[in-house]
Length: 202
Image (cartoon, rainbow, N blue to C red; front, side, top):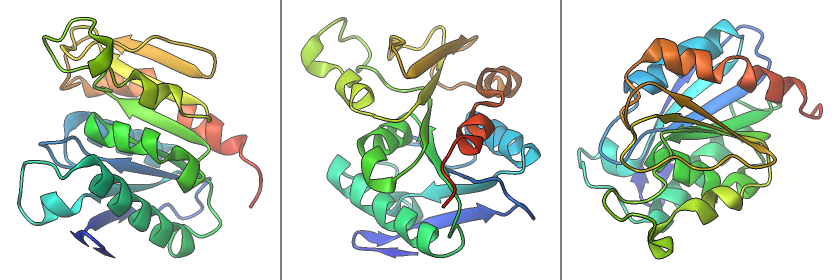
């Protein structure tokens, strides 16, 4: 799938009669096969939700260092737009991802028209920065205007975002890697399906 920053890759896992779609992005240095993304994708399929795991152009090109935020956002928006006008046409969307992918989904939530944002291991601030407000990514979460679920490891070195009206934060055993797939599935639960059920009919 071409974007203005190079080819991206969308791994589409269709359901026969989907209730909606869940579109997820990967972390900065990882790919779409991370344990938490795999756990959520499996859970969504069990709930008759079509899943798309999106690889950013820099990963498709074989690079581990992420592109600048504006490039990540632009490529993501092009992919979601192509999906929404093509294989996901007529389906309500929940967008999200892990770590960097969660940040992208938050920053672009209004433009994608999603009905919810799912954040796995949202990187609240760089490790070792303490409570330095100038390094916090909390404004990206606070700017989201649709219901949001954050699943965070209790020992995440990036910190744990606060809950607020419209944003649920569920803490699970583990660190930023969220390797306990069972814990992640339990924390996510029916939330994506509930968001899609409550979406307006398109």
